[in-house]
Length: 250
Image (cartoon, rainbow, N blue to C red; front, side, top):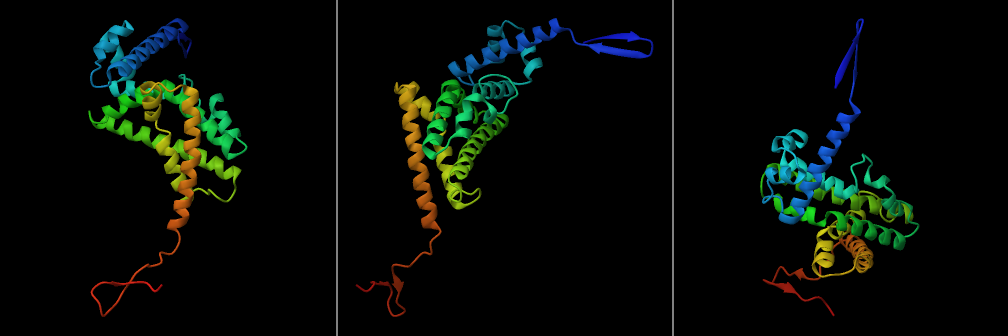
């Protein structure tokens, strides 16, 4: 940034060329970091390796991002979103079918597609972050935040289901909480890693399977929540005159 003085005024401006150079440097470092994290994991990747792949000096990596953990977070965030634009996931075009779904079948199919898209971009980075959780406090906090974000995503889907089927999935109810937990378990990119990258499923096969699992899991969760809210009738009573339970009358 330079300044131009005129009278008592000081006007500052940013060089477009310098801004573009900084943007390209940031992009090169982030791309190199993501490639290394995917290929070798977090612990086995050094800032020196990232710098060499990006074609910059090692101190530049620290200056731009601050730490290796910050690099992993940025790589994860970009993989989830698909780019570095500051637009929430819920407002992105590839998430709109979830928001616009008219029934539960459309909703779960749309969310399964979203999870497939995210898995294709981020499954290996999620695995790197999971393993990095044992490295230090900063990476452990990053992993916890990543897991919490997945549950918030699941909660958004159940909230949309409540919009569609009013009265069944109200936020905060045991039914909604169980259903959210079920989606949270299934929206883990580890499933994409295991079935698509590991077992060779096609993305279409995976997405169709995941949509069916969403449907089944939510139905089971609803039944469990309903059962747990019922009074627990005792099947056996303890007789004061005996040391064990008495048999129920037949």
